[in-house]
Structure formats: C-alpha cells, structure tokens
Image (cartoon, rainbow, N blue to C red; front, side):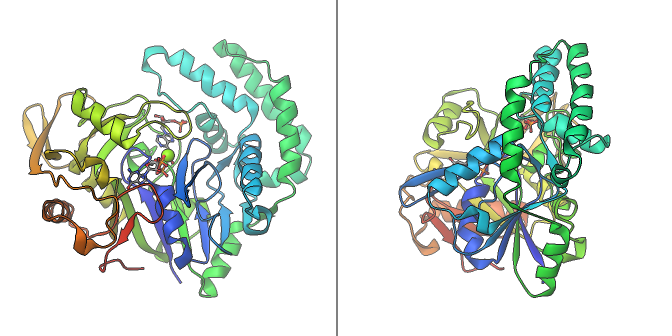
Length: 424
Ligand code: GDP
Ligand code: IMO
Ligand code: MG
C-alpha cells in the first residue's frame, strides 16, 4: 500500500486541517510529519470550530489512528492543553493517538531562545510564531535535542545538560533566563505525556502499509516556508515538502502515492518576508475581511494578495503534486475581476520560473479574468458552478498542468466539493 500526502503549496494556512478532516473517512491512519505548534489547523463542523496545533486533523473522525511522527517537534505543555480540550469535547484521544519516540521535545528554553533570536534580529526578524520551533530543530540537527523516547531514561540529567547550554546562550544573547515557573509546568506535562502510547512509529506505519492499510500524511506550514526551497531566511525550520513525509515518518520515497497540493484561490502570508503578489490596497483589505485572514494561533493579521502561479508551479514541481485542492473560492464571490500572476518580471525580464530570490525587483505579470458574482457557499456539486468560475478553474488547470479535484466553498466540512476527477 502507498501513503498519500496532503500539503500546503503557499505560505501556510491554505486549509489543510479542513481537508484532512474531510478525507479521513477514506483512510485508516492520519500522520503528521513535521512542524509543531507553530501550525494552526482549523476544522469546522456541526456549528463548532476547533484549532489543532500538534495533533493530526483526523482526530475527530471515527476509529482512525492518528500519529505524531518523528519529524514533529512537540511542546508537552501545549500538547496537554490541546489534548485535554479534545477530551472535554468527547474525543477518546488516548485510544486513537500515538506518538513517535523520535519526535523532538520543545523545551521552555527553546521558546526563550526563539524570542531572544528574534529580538537580536531587530528589523530583519522572521516574525516567528514564538513557539521555539527554530531552536528545537537547531538542537535536533546539532545533535543536542531531547526526544520523546528520552522521557523514560535518565531524563532529568539530559534535560539539565540541555538547559544549561541554553541558559549560556540566552545570557550571551541578553535573553530572558527566568525559566523556573515554565519548567514546573513543563515537567508536569512530561508526566502527562507518559500516559500516551509512545511508539516506534516508523515500524508501526510500515507494518500497516504491508497489511494493506491506508495512510494519509498531513503537512504543516507550506512549501514556500520550506527551509531549503522557501523564501529563505523567512521560512520555518523543517522540510514542509513531500520529501519531509519520508524523513518525518520513515516512509520510503517509492511508497508515496497521491500528493494532494492545497492552495487558496488567492494567497496569504503571516510574518516577515517577500510576497510578490501582496496587495496593500482596498482589494487586499477586502480579501482579509471576507476571508477572515487572521492567524489561527497568533491572531496576527495575514498579508493578502492574488494567487501566484509562478510560485505554485515551483511548489508543484518540488512536491510531485498529482492533484490540486483549491480553497476559499467563496471569498472571491463578490469580486468583479480576479487576477492571477502568470509570470514575474525580474529586472525587466519576464520569467515563468521561480527565481533564487524574490526579495527585489520582482514585478508580477497578471492575467485578469471576470469574476463570477455568485454566492457559491451552498453549492453541492461541480455542475452548479457558475460559468465564469468554471472558466477560472480551467484556466488554472491549464496554467498548472495538474487537475483541481477538490474545491472548497466555505469553512464547514460540508462545504467541500469532491469532483468526479478525484482519485485516491
Ligand atoms: P491550515 O493551517 O492550512 O489548516 O489553515 P488554517 O486553519 O490556518 O486557515 C484556514 C482558514 O480558512 C480557517 O479559518 C478555515 O476555517 C477557513 N477555511 C477553510 N476552507 C475555507 C473555504 O473554502 N472558505 C472559507 N471562507 N473559509 C475556509
Ligand atoms: P500552518 O500549518 C502560516 C510562519 C511564521 C513565520 C515563519 C517561521 O497553520 O499552515 P516558526 O514559528 O515556524 O519559526 O515561524 O513561518 N509560519 C506559518 N505561517 N501557517 C503556519 O502553519 C505557519 N507556521 C509557521 O509566521 O513567518
Ligand atoms: Mg494554519
């Protein structure tokens, strides 16, 4: 059996959580493969709204196993908050969630280091989520990290050694070193973590695949935030691309089946960094207002702009996307004209290839299409799409050379149109 991967093609917040929830009934297992509580994946159904950070978005469907993979970084305190809230809403989480022994732990000092690093950068700060993501992945790669499997063996000594190093670094950076209160809560949360099933997830997943089970891998962030291929240094600290599912779960590349690439009908970004199609005018404000474009975790205003097909083509190439999923089309329901960036002018020269840097001298070349001026939020089938919207979708498919097989027309589970062309 193969694993299918669902991941973001833009700068995150494409709507991954919603679609994972919708697709989960077709799978036996849902597994997160990278990122941590920097993610905020929103799900809406039966009039309720939930935001998941570290826990996979398959958690609300019946019976499926959910896995936090080795590529994820886990903050025990935030995990506990999230898990207890789910328990309160009736999810039998301890029964269906498994955690990899090899996932790395976010320590209180990682969060302090995140803040100190950002302060040090001043005006050129990344605008991180402040969750300690960068410092935790740094420790992983520099071979100083603490893993979930460590909590059972000589943990205190390992923790103290890592903390001592962090305190030295914080002192050098002029950061906050007052960790006592955070630490007490964190140690309690470590005890809570011990009540979960902590497993060798790479063995577990590969056995499931051998037994014919279906696995959906859930990405966090988006391709343009990938540490290698995103708008570096304004990126996150993990590989958000499809290859991250291989390293973040222990799944071999020849096991990858469908790759679902998800994007918004426009584009957003939170935090600092270049964004070629960003709109600073009334249109940008209108997209933000109608699309409620505010961070699910930080509440920060998301920057808004037109869809960028140069960046999307690049993302499709890097991920081997087999099917596209377009979200939030309904947000554009009242726009007379829709624009899509089909090429960049770099220093006056037109290119369709994503360049090394998008920091300077990029001028988007737009194609304008007529809007559909129709409320699409209660549409139930692709046959009901207005003609102008059908034209827009066909235009995108032609530009991107990948079929759009799922379309979302509202935040609710039910507002999802799976086209006849969808394949699993
Ligand atoms: P994720 O991080 O990729 O899971 O995305 P987020 O949850 O951070 O952001 C997506 C936001 O858009 C959430 O508030 C969703 O409830 C909402 N959303 C998802 N799909 C749609 C849609 O098709 N239309 C509208 N209007 N909202 C949507
Ligand atoms: P989901 O999974 C949008 C952004 C931050 C910042 C940069 C680095 O909900 O799509 P980090 O805290 O990771 O070191 O911050 O990445 N960022 C996200 N933006 N959606 C996310 O996750 C993000 N996770 C991180 O805003 O610019
Ligand atoms: Mg999000």
